[in-house]
Amino acid sequence: MQALIDIDTRHPCGRIERDIYGHFLESAFFGNIEGGVLDEGSPLSEPGPGVRAGFREDVLALCRELGIPNVRWPGGNFTSPYHWEDGIGDRSTRPRRLELAWGREESNRFGTDEFLAWCADVGAAPFLVHGCRSVDDAVRWVEYTNYAGDTAYTRRRKENGHPQPYGVRYWGIGNEPYGPWQMGHRPATEYAAAAREHARFMRLVDPGIRLIACGSPWQQEEWTRPVLQRAGSLIDYLSLHLYGATTHPYTARAGDDDYEAVVAQPLYFEQRIQDYAHLVVELSAEAGLERPPALALDEWNIRHLEPADWPEPAPGADGGTAPRELPDGSGEPRPRRLRVDRYSSRTLADALFYAGVFHTLHQTVSLPAPVTMANTVNLVNANGLLEVRPGGVVKSASYHVWDLYQNHTGPVALPTAVEGPARTAAVRQGDNGEGDGAFATRPGVVPYLDASATLSADGRRLHLAVVNRRRDTAIRTRIVRDGRTGAVPAVAEVRDLGADVDDLLAANSLSAPDVVAVRHRPVVETPDGRYDFPAHSVTVLAFDLT
Image 1 (tube, rainbow, N blue to C red):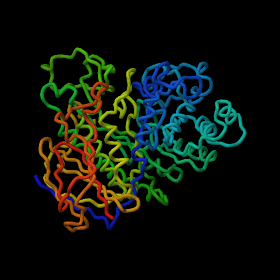
Image 2 (cartoon, rainbow, N blue to C red):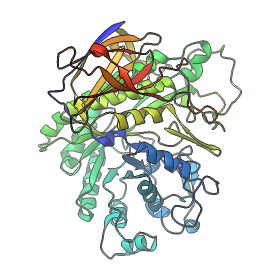
Image 3 (tube, rainbow, N blue to C red):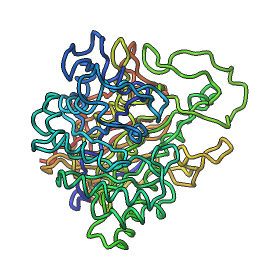
């Protein structure tokens, strides 16, 4: 197979914000916090006393190594019933609560000061999300973290070990209030009025904060219009939550690894983001706003689905899901009820999905309402970049994708045209079902090569990230710069993921940590701009232009 990639370095599309490589932690959620970033009593954790007591040092080291731009906390669904004051002060006196989002008990041993100390240790900007059910509660949280004066709340902050304001910049106003699963579920008009009041008074405490209000993935016009009309002038972002889905946990047992469906789903993300961006621009103009808010894809991932009647999954000591006794696979081929396996490891196929979504996010810089923040669910455990177990921590396949894109591509997006082979497919519309156990789909053309070209800030280094979605065939490609052949340097630095892996569902574990890992070759010849992109791989080429 052959293809051509034409990169236009003369007309940049815009700047890619580093915040699109952000992350997410949720309390009381499948080992994100306790057993993840906090593991009190573990020999791998920081000893006490102090606010950092119990922080897993191996997790901190890998997060620093990756370089994390921002982290969203405390949720997620956990946000809506959360009372932040439960999580400050002496850990031994904090109340233990029945947590109503996930039906668990929350110890509150990891609260505001712990989260902000952890972010400082990692070097990440904190992104706090309030439930948007009490204006006074939200205002006092901003006062506790950001106000420099002498009040009862700032004195409590000082007593808790932090004399100076934290200066938390990013604040979310609610989480999915459009959903009946949330405490504080309400119609759009009621949420819009609450968001306006929260935003107004939170800004009175600290005018410099950046506010993220809730957009919606469903009935978008009906939800978004009142939010922009009432609160649009006071917010900086509208959120959007999107999830992909794979059935391989059960279909692979019958020989269907679901690979083609997985690697095609970035097209679903692309369409949904573009549609919502244009709607936000239209409704912002209708509301008389000077500018539309940016988009924050502050929940996204791909969900590994399994039959709901299987035995409950549990974390495996080596990583992933623990062994369990499953049906023999000869029963119903398409279960009517599915659930998410929160411990299922990220696979090579997932890695190609994540890379494709990053290409979509890069392309949004040219939209009038671009995605300038994104947060994958999750950073630690629960289908995250890092799988933390008592015996150590695993860099999942997704960890390496984030490393490739945030550390080895540039911040300036370039127009990138691909001419090459493609297939027509019924593209799965994420984890949205039809009610009979099937997924909603939409016809689409899925290119086998998906590319994103970027420049370094100084314009001296050209990066080309390419996903080859072909299951078993390399694609010979000519790379053209500004419409001219021979304009690409004859050598490149190459990093690729998946090229040396045969199993499309391969995943890393404590005992086999580098099955899916980046291969780095400092000097590779690219004569006349030609390069063969390996099957089922993500590749980043870097060219020195001067």
